[in-house]
Length: 258
Image (cartoon, rainbow, N blue to C red; front, side, top):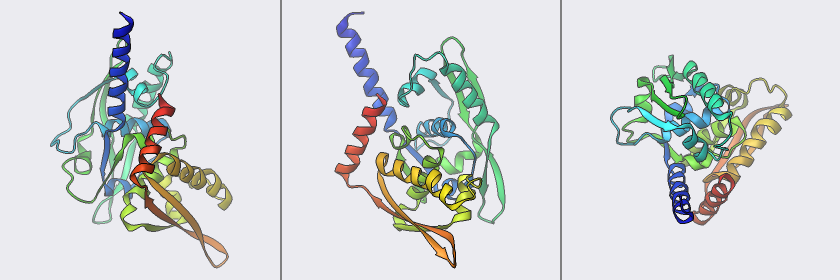
């Protein structure tokens, strides 16, 4: 391969990865606001990568085919690492075996699966899978009550709580201010193990808000609210970033994952 053709290939790959990172994650608000799931950072990024490949006008889920190296390039991971295959394989199996609790309109709760069968070609690293059919009402043909954002916004986050809290606050962006009971928010984030107020503040909220403000299209401030002698609520103020600020944030994120 000549130097010129190699540069051309790299430019094309970079352009394709930039396009992939700009794909939209679109979810019905119920899937964000009324669900509870335990997923680590890598699992969340993988499932959002898959959801970003769903087109808003699709009527059915189609089989998704992608390479492990493609996923690594989109997410800014070392695609030459020998451990990627086993790591992604383990992550996909974990997602396949996990379920999500969601509250229905009548107040009852039900479980949903994320994906069904996963097939990986060992030598090529090609992955074939399909999102579970029960997710269709939450991801397909959405006309109202949905949230959308660019996949790029979450790719470089380092805390599992950052992604979940970002989605939650993004879904309430139109309200500007949203408050939660602290115990309710811990429950939604699967952060009940942080019993002490300062631990929850420093290890969950502070880190998540710092990443949200640095990496995404919204800016968030918060305050804890006391009832009596105990902090019982947390209030978030959400502002959409101006176009220039959002562009700058996006460019800095792209530079950090190249």
